[in-house]
Image (tube, rainbow, N blue to C red; front, side, top):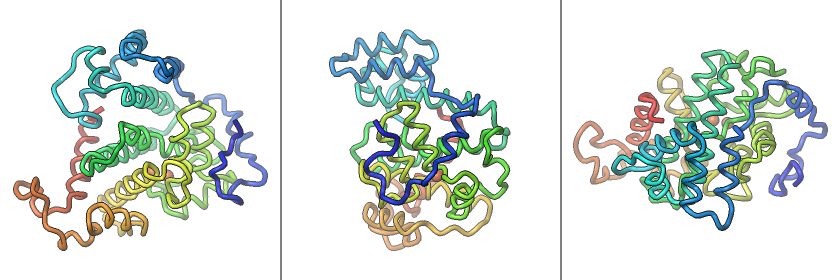
Length: 315
Ligand SMILES: [Fe+2]
Ligand SMILES: [Fe+2]
């Protein structure tokens, strides 16, 4: 398979991708853990049964612990606590289990990489990935969107390119850009200036060399321009909206102004009948007629709950 997928718009590929040469030479470039890759391979076999899946997960302690934690986490499922891998696998089902394996492997990759980052960036980038994943997951649940855990993994993976750029020995370390918390067009332009590629291209490449599912590469590549996505447009759009809302939350925490993207406002209008600014135009949903969330737009409730969830280190 070629590096660039056919869905890429023409003209977007740098003429000379020097950055790939730089990044390939990074000795400490983190990789998706082999135990998760092996489990994923078994899970992807067409004849894989839930029993096979439980067996392969049980082979690895880290994976078992991660799957159990995820199966009991409000990020992924709601219900009674499960205490064994067999129960977790039955609760999740085959498709969610595949995504859960990717999520557990991804968390391990983040943890491994965090050792090479400045603590400030390690904390921020993981918080951002988890926050976007939590928002996407809650939006999907609230709107009954037909996802089965891929929205969570997409949130975790969307900015993997930023993780690579934040490595201390990377030629264009993100950590040197003190203003780079918000993913403004300026920040993306600076990334391109330094390496000839921004984090969307680097993230896509990184996901592909790690042989992670193709839908994640689509999300990484197009999350700043969801309208350009050729495949999995629904998932790319959801991740882009979740990221924009996360950035709105950060801006509010830092008392900075932040404008949601036009595509986010369109998405909110399509799914909720109005944008976040127009919250007074819609009646509050029946579930939030009382209590601390009374009168809030459902998206504001989602943001508050997702922020609390991440703060409590839900997963
Ligand atoms: Fe992001
Ligand atoms: Fe991004």
